[in-house]
Image (cartoon, rainbow, N blue to C red; front, side, top):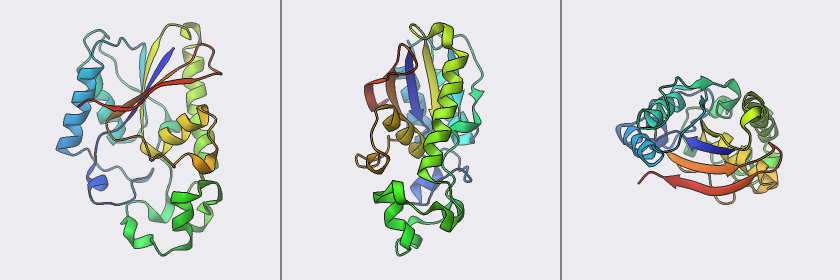
Length: 209
C-alpha cells in the first residue's frame, strides 16, 4: 500500500504569517488552488482506492482539486476523517505569529515540541496531536485492510499534523520532528507499508511544479 499524504495549498492566513490551526479555516488563495491543480496533474495517473480528508475546508478543497485532475480514478467524494484536523492552537489560532514571540511557550512550540506547555494557551499538545493522527491513520488502514499490499490512498491534511504523524512513522523523536521544517503546502509525501506496522518513506514533500 502506498499512502499519498498531501498538505493543503497556500491559504490567506499562511500569507499573513498568522497561526493556521484547527480552529482557523482560511480559504485557499488563487496560487494555492493552482498549486493543488498542478499537484493533481502530477498524480493524475495514480489510481486511488479512496480519498480521505481533514474536515477543514482548505484541506477538502485541496482534495477535490487534486482528484479533479485524476484520469484513472472514478469520481469520488473525499471521506472526512475528523482526526486529520490541524493542531488546535488555542488562543494563538488565527493571530499573528510575531505577536507571541516574547511569550514563554513560543520557543518550545518551535524548538522543543515535547515540552510545549499547550495548556497555558488552551492548545492541544504535540503528544495529543500525534496520538490523534495515528488514530486517524489506524482507522483508514483498517477500512482498507484487505488491500494493504496493493492499493493507493490519498490523505489530505495539514502541515503540523502530517509532519508529526509521518515523523512518528519514521520513529523520529517528538522533540526532533520539526528540525527539517514542515511538509510544504501543496506537496505530496509518499509512504509505503505492506502490513500497517512498518512504514517506508519513498518521497518527501514533492510539489507539482
